[in-house]
Amino acid sequence: MGKSHTLWLFFIQIIVKVSISSSGKVPAVIVFGDSSVDSGNNNFIPTLAKGNVEPYGRDFPGYPTGRFSNGRIPPDFISEAFGLKPTVPAYLDPAYNITDFATGVCFASAGTGYDNATSKVADVIPLWKEVEYYKEYQNKLRAYLGEEKANEIIRESLYLVSSGTNDFLENYYTMPDRQFQFTIQQYEDFIIGLAENFLRQLYELGARKISLTGTPPMGCLPLERTLNVLEHHGCVQKYNDVALEFNAKLSLLVAKLNKELPGFQVVDANGYNLFLQIITKPSRFGFEVTKTGCCGTGTFEMGFLCDPKSPFTCPDANKYVFWDAFHPSEKTSQILSKYLVENLLAKFL
Ligand SMILES: *[C@@H]1O[C@H](CO)[C@@H](O)[C@H](O)[C@H]1NC(C)=O
Ligand SMILES: *[C@@H]1O[C@H](CO)[C@@H](O)[C@H](O)[C@H]1NC(C)=O
Image 1: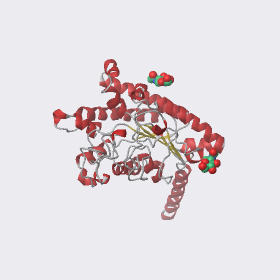
Image 2: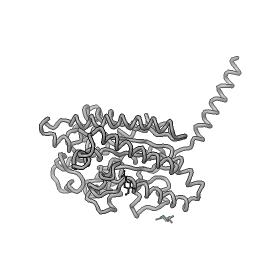
Image 3: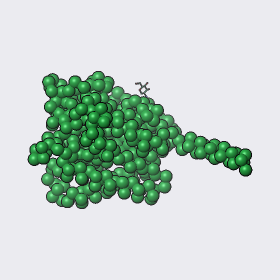
Image 4: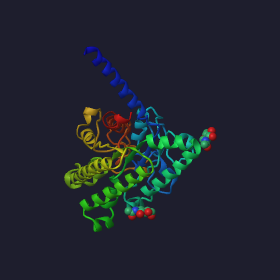
């Protein structure tokens, strides 16, 4: 029995190897969402929500790129981990064309959300428009590589979707309309419905491998802490609770779509717990400051408010969990990305 057993094992190993390799490596990373993943599309539209002033980009590439970071953001790290290029270019950036976009492209726009009304707050690209750009991209890809190769890229690519925070913080809790229309639970459900429509659209357009990220512990963003005067600038528990509730609903949506749509592989790429650990136990991750961002006073600045001449801007962003009052530092993004790749996206590697 020993020998035939070994032989069987040998065959099984071959079958496993063949099926792994034929599942197709990821040929490109394709990005949708908000500032958590925007590599600079807002530079090319008329909005104030831009990360294209110094000191943004200070640590990579040394000048502002439009990313809301001192350096790279998660899609860049994830692309690199998948053996692709170390940065994912913005679709609206005229410095790039389909040759570059064939191995990675970003349609995300800082300040946007699932809700059309959210994108109107700062005049940024609504999600439906990101999808229009994606359709245009598909046409360019087919013209450039031919139908068959383009379809393979569309099918095998890893789609990173990260959105939701602005729907709550920039829209629901800041503008009057949605609060008047919906309780917070109803609004969460409304957003989940929009997320579902969006994911079904991606599926119909040929996307299969999706990484879906919801909201971080958004009550702990420095700006929200600054406003939380009554609780001595602690995290706003109400916002963290909404984030948890929303992420749990997203998780149910993921399970539902994976069950219903043949071949759809959506990963619930939830980094909430790790992010909260980083915020509550910063020294375990090598950070020293978690309550304020590096840029300016770190209490409210982002975008053009990050004054290049501010004497308060920190010298070493690697000691800060947050780069500005709303966005993680490059180092935090790197830690979160590594976790996502190794624990949740590894099956696509
Ligand atoms: C893209 O740009 C490169 C260099 O800028 C150029 O060589 C190439 O022909 C362009 N490709 C297409 C498809 O336009
Ligand atoms: C958002 O706006 C687009 C374009 O006007 C429209 O097609 C879509 O139905 C809107 N979505 C919702 C949920 O209203």
